[in-house]
Structures are given as C-alpha cells and as structure tokens.
Image (cartoon, rainbow, N blue to C red; front, top):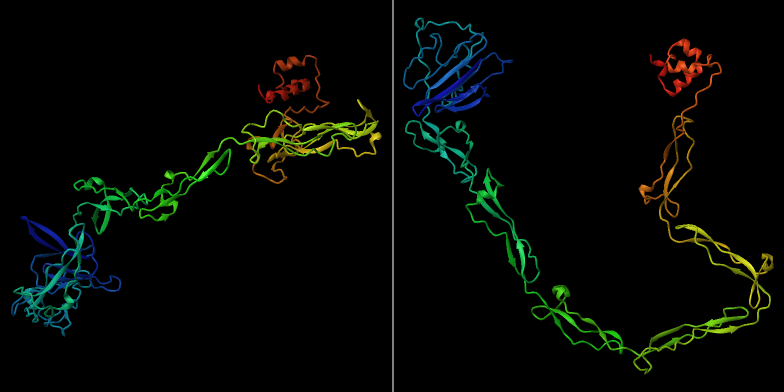
Length: 553
C-alpha cells in the first residue's frame, strides 16, 4: 500500500497541486518533509521483517488544506488516523470508549516520549490483517476526551534568504529560519524553539541569468626588438561567466563593447650604433694587391663599448678592404740542374724548373719577365751504348673494372740497344736483370654497395612449368652486408623454368589398329570405348593436347 500527501494552493483563480510525500507516481524515502505549515515524519517499515504499514505524523498546526490518498493492490487494510484540535474538552469521534487517554489505538497508534511534553511521536497507523479491522458503531460507545496536549508557543518560520553569492551567472543562497511566536509571529530568541526540529538550511540557486560578455585581455608578449622600435602582441578573447565557470564565446557577443588592441609598438631602449674609431691603415704589401684595416666598434647610447651583437650587423662598416699598390717587378726563377741524365748510356737530357715570379727585392723596371725564358733541359752523355741489353716496358692498359679492384697489363720485352736502333731478344737474354711487372691491380674508384647473387638452383619440375631460386645479397666494398644498394637494380630471386609441356609416356600396348584412325579423331569418335581401344595412340595424342576431349559427347 502507498499513501500520498498533497496540498493545494490558489494561484491566479485556479488550484495548483503540489506533492509533499509520494507524489507524481514516485515513492519517496522515509524521512521528514515540510508542507502546509508543519513538518511531516514519513515512515515505511521493512515489509519483510515488519507487518506494520506506512504512516506519517505531524505535530502541526497546519495552515493549508492537505489531501491524503491511498494506492493499494492487496485487499484494503484500512486507514487509522487521529488528530487534535485546539481548545478544551474536545471529543474525537474515532477514539473507542474502552480506550483510556494516552493508550494505543488497536495496538498501532500511540503517543510516546512522555518525558518531553513538547514532542509527540506517532507509531505506524496501519493495522495488521489486511482489512479485518472490526467495525465500530460510534453510537454504541461513549466518546472519551483526548489526553491534554501541550501546545508549542514558538515555531520555526522561514524569514528570508542569504544574499546571492553572484549577481549573475548562477550563484547560490541559503534559506534563513527564525524562531517566532506561534500566534503573533514575532521573532524571538532561537533558544525558545526546539533546535531538533529546526529545518536544515538548504542551498538554492539564484541569479541564474548569464553575465554580460566581456573582453578578456591577456598579457603583452615580449617586444620583437631588443632595441629600437618593435612590435608586441596580446590575446583578446570574448568571455562569459556562467555557473562559476568562465567560457570562451563567439566574438559577436562582445560587439556592444569596443575591442581592445591586439598589437602595439614597443621600444625597450635606444639601439647602439657603429662608430669608425680610426682611419685606414697602410696597405700590407708594397706592390700588387694587399689589404688594409681600420677599427670599427659598437657604441651604446651612453658612449660605452658593447658587443657587436648589440648593433645591427647588416649595417656594420667594413673594417678590412683590399688595396692595390700597382704592379710589382717580375723575374725568372729557376732551380739547379738535375744530376741525373735521362739515359744510362748514349745521349740524354738533364732538367731544371723555371718560373716567372714577383721579385720584391730587385729594382727591375715595372714590366714582365720578358720572352727570353731560360732553358729547362740540357744535353748529357754518360757513355756510348754498345750492344747493351735491358728490359723495356710499355704503357699500362686500361683497368679491367670501372670501379673496385681490377687488373691492367703492359708489354715487357728484352731489347738490345745500339746507337740508332733496338733489337728484340729472347727474355732469357735479360735474365740477369730485374724484370718489370707486366700485370698489376688497379682501382679507379670505390664501387660502393652492389648486388651479389648465387647460381640458380635446380628447377622444381622437369616440365609444365616449375621454378628455381637463388640467394641475393647487398654487400659493401669490404664485403659486409649493406642497405645502400639500389632497389630497382636488385636481381630476381625466383623465376619460372621448364615451361614446355611434358611428353606423354609411351605405352607399347597403345597402338592404332587401323590406318584411318585420323578419321576417328576428326569424327570425335574417341569418346566411345570401342574406337578408343582401336585407335589408342591417336586418341591418346589428341587427349594430351586437348584435356577433356574424351569427356565430351
């Protein structure tokens, strides 16, 4: 069974109903609920461990009409109620004649805590037994006067609320309760009211309207220049406060306000400047092209020398430049003659180096070295050549490899040299002399990483298409595994092989018994067992060339 308590109030000439307990088809938890000017205590015992039903009590007084509803699915268990009106010697029509004042009604409803005359506790007003409560005839009983009830002189009354914590954007406030005289409603000291029955101050929202949008201005950034005129920036956002949170909103909400500037000029200090402290020095060379220098310093606005970084390096004056002192005198320079003749016998030459260079020492006129170049070679003759035998080597051939290690060869012959001619001799004629090499290794440049591969493996099938494989590796010049080979040049690691069709196995017993078996094949008679056996060879050949030939009719 569910009991519900509602109250009605008159607004704008019609009634508005508000639920106090178990309204709107929802079941409330047991506890205290305020309404119609008093506080109700709602109880709902455990349905498993107790047979008592639901109940609610209030000490009163009530100042509005309250309606009680009962919703039940089991047989009607009955409703027991008891109320007290102000006055003296009033008689309740529901109090049995055999019940003394203060005694429980049918063992279910009573007044407890007699030690506290200002507090009355009511037990569950339900009866046990699902509607078997005995009926009464009010005329057969003499009503008894209810027990005297001490009325409270002071009650708690809502006297207003605290100030809202925010003027907009949803703040909060608390209800204020004051102790007042029950009749005159004059405020008195809180000590005159029962502190245990004082309602709790509940928080409620207030000023829930959104605050006006405003421009939120950030801090200025650092100046873009350490000296001189620069720029600085700041962030300006349109913000709005709601529910103690500041949210970023669309800029058009702040269009009623003038938007602050987001950029501004700035100047931390006056920049330092370049100053030329000395004149150009003398040229470093007496003739020709040389260099000269001067002192250039960065000076602050108070005249102190500072690091060059304080000034604009793009505007720095040159402190070094080239200087041309005019052409210098030139003369021939040469080394001593070499001691070795180019020929071991007969006529040869000796050489020396000759250069035209600047001469800073001599007082030659300012002109070139002239056209009379000193000789760079002179004739020499150690001894006449008379049938002298020696090895002669030709020039080396090209290297056999474009990169990496290769070989090159040359011709080496044994010759007999006379005054005007050479005679080719057998190699043993020069056996007493050290023979020059006719082959040597060569390397034009490093190859870098290259692809290497093994030979192909055997084919996986002897006919009708198999495959073979090989191993491919990328190796560097030192024959170590590398990742620097060109991927597009990688050799294939697998290829098909033996793609020709397999030759059919020859069965000596499979022969053509007739000379015109080709007619049998053309007439497609091989599908019949008789012709297949009579022209076995011809039917077998066509079946190998055209699989499924024998299966069609």
